[in-house]
Image (tube, rainbow over the protein chains, first blue to last red):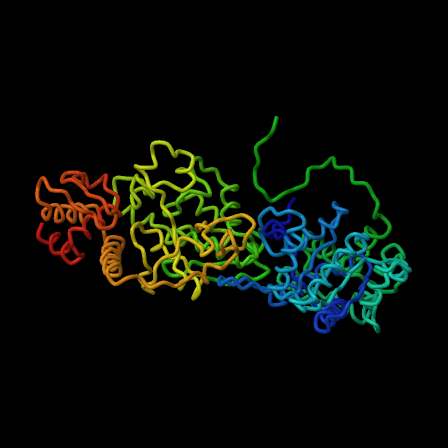
Length: 313
Length: 295
């Protein structure tokens, strides 16, 4: 027998709003520091912290605009490190594409064009996400590009953030930039003197509580009695388990928190509940910790909301 | 025209820097301003459009008085505007109104005797005497003030800028003829010596030529603003009344003699040729308006 209350409910709606969490405040704070001071940093955080979302949010609110009058401003230029092109052209293309559509040009001309375009769009800070994937050629190009912009006629020194995923409490590039080669010495010299390598940690238990309270507000219309924050302690304990926190940072990443909470909320919603309980949260935590590599036997057909469909075959 | 923010999906489908047409700007000028503001070489935008669309018999050397609408449809999203807004940079709308029985075409303005420069050089034999290449020109003052190439500069026989009363220039002082789109040089510069068109000499036209150009411009302005097929036919009738039968008419703009009866087919008479006849006979827009009311 189907539950009439459940039948009436529309599918669970996931909220994808960007949340300014304590991690994001710390992370964006350093990005802004680099932007304002035109300083160079290697900024690291564990995978799933919310680095890419934070970068995207910063660029969205940086004042970037294209006017119809030919004026384009892109104060913060952020790209992801090229994955499929080990040549410097991969990075050139990624940077150039940030401005929009451009005609085919020779590689040499595109490099010159990029410098002109960055100067005219008043780029002030360059952020490379997934910077751990950069290679020697990419780094050499970044140095050349920033040098060209800092020199006359542009005289535009740039802030540079190499944002990388890290593990084992070490920061990528630290050993590389300490090398004796001239290029690395030049990089090392350009990095900020006080804060060259920065690790931005995830959330403490205290920081978790207001985030959970925010989730309550976001999902109130779907789960009216939601009181998530009372589960702060068990959630923190689960999320700092050695499986989810392999480097034993004792901090919670936003990715893990989001997964645990949203799966639990969705399950509660689909069961017709108006709040989550410890058993349900524990069930999802088990799924993420103990059963995380479990194989799903896909015998059953997933229910969908797409309505009746035509049979094939 | 709205400002585009980074969060807008159109950010990545528009050119790095956008331009919008200036009042009465010709498409040529808009494309060159697009090149300049985006730090591209002369003609890059136009070549990009040609590569992105398929137009047999239409290329870099084509007259841009009228362009295929699909080309404007291709350009419009890159600038985040409608193709209709871009249509104002051509004479397509005006020619469609003036020649309702025809598909808008540059020949309706320039006449069949005009061919793009490349075409003439490829078909020298036999055509040199009968066809004249349409040598384009710019007003150095318009260039200097606003990087502006107006549609006016596409009108045949007009030799001076109606705004600045300066002679249009079709050659650089180094002797290189004006070419709008040249590879390897910055936009708005001479392809021979690199001198900016804005720095080309600003030469006042002689008083007699100024009067002729003023009359010519008045007629163009009249027809392009409010002309219709009927008004064009009526204007021709008024003009033909002035020409004694069996006499030759001295065309002041083309500097040729036209026997009576040559221009009796208004639908086959280009606007440039019609204006030439009217100017030569001494007919003004006011005369046409009166004549049209009388019929």
